[in-house]
Amino acid sequence: MTKALMIVDVQASMFWGRWALPEANDLLRRIGERLNQARLESELVIHVQNDGPADEMDAPGEPWWELVLHAKSNELVVRKSTQNVFESNPDLAGKLLELGVTEIELVGVQSDLCLVSSARGAVASGFKILVKRDMHATYDGGFPGSEDPTPAKLISDRVQIELEALG
Image (cartoon, rainbow, N blue to C red; front, side):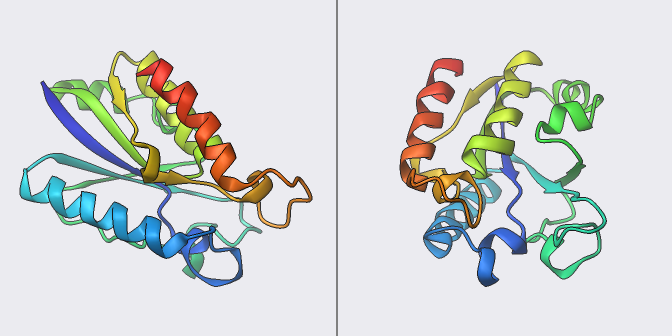
């Protein structure tokens, strides 16, 4: 069994500036440590980069679109335009299977959007998934400036229950 580490949407817009996630620095540190471990263990690393619409801060080429954790030359960078990376990239599952990947560990953001959608896509494509509780996050109310009082931690915990059932 070959495991891959998939880092979902760890882009400048989510970690720096006025739209930074709650506790963004702590999450970034944990993801960075996991990335270093994956590199030491020669795991396949997949960086997923969201391509936002042309008028959004995460539009391709904008400073906020940039990956925070830079990919090495032997790591995959996969861009997406939908929440599910497998939907945006229909050939991705086949490529990963050719590389012998059977399990994907997902880390990143947002718990309730792209991370869970990509996890569902991985399962639908035949992969086993692993998502650790402290390796993903979202915003209070689910998006910046939301009037929904639901704390980000509670949203992520609810998503975690679904992810554990999927895995």
